[in-house]
Length: 133
Image (tube, rainbow, N blue to C red):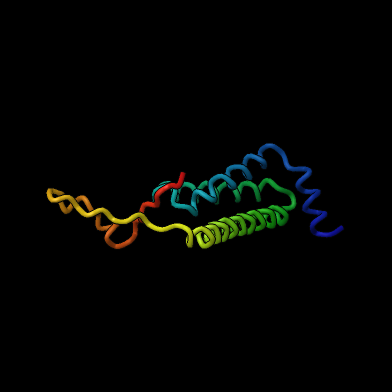
């Protein structure tokens, strides 16, 4: 029997506790990587991901198959993130020639300097693009 067939047989015998561990890992690992949460939330998500993956490995017989599944899940999430980044970059590259930034309005005579943010002056905030139609 090949390794993939053995892993498939292991997947057929996974119980509800192992499914809960996999679910907790798959939900908390991306939160630990992303910037949706603050630093405390990311640390907690990383701790939950680590604890749930360790519990999944401890509950699975043979444990080596569980380790392989965890590594495959991390790799699959990495491929998904890379594909999403690539689609985002390609869509921006394709759409960018047709979009022109809106002309900047001259500040009013009584406008305060706080009206323009330092982020906009550095170019960190993208210019507003008018919608057509």
